[in-house]
Length: 343
Image (cartoon, rainbow, N blue to C red; front, top):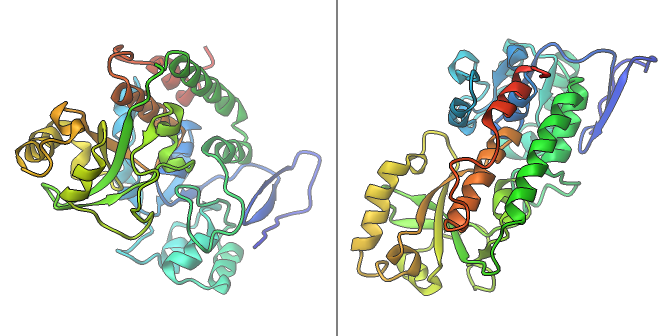
């Protein structure tokens, strides 16, 4: 699928991204929509929330981390949702009437039953699509290039003529990674990444760590995957307590997919989930449970701002004896970038 706008002029900007191809714009879009936390967070990082016309799936956009940035906040309830339950109707796109849709149209076709004709209709009658579904890898329909989070972020920043903010945040990101990796100990613990089902959890979706956006923080801290080399399938299975005990990981992290999920509440999580695992006769002898190294994870719809917080947290979870500081990056500096302060 490719989309093109007006003939390039000396001041026009061309930005290319698979699977949509290239867009040539005479000026940055005035209004935009995105589906979830990855691209919504990019817009937040670039100071574009005043142009945000709607959010595809608000519960896949977690805003709690913004409370740690001085003077920065976002009430996502102020923006209309495009989704209607499990549907993403075309009528929602007409209603918000955005200049551009920061969404992967191939993902929309394969997730919501749209046709390519539906995509073309919205692109022609409302505004073009621009985006690549980069959260996870493994979908059979995604036979085109994946981008890293920061590659995709650079393209969005170019689209909106906000490259300076991208470059400043990229420097913060690089410094954070260098700080962490320069201090990694020789011994790497094994981590088991799970998505719990139920409160307390009765079963779990095992999550292999790969090089997708959803797992980027674990790759930064170079932790070992407890599932590597196991006979547990990568997709579509649940495991129970016995499988957890057999894996016997050093660390367990239970991640979430939605902002309102139970596992984002660390205090309740440790009371109910860790407490439950310690009382269960099958799981109480697991190394991670015995040592209290069972943690509430972050979210896997992470953009550039959210990833800073989650990289920091991953370092503390993986190596608590090494990373004892309260913070590993400057919140005030990031807040100044987001607000457009050049000082």
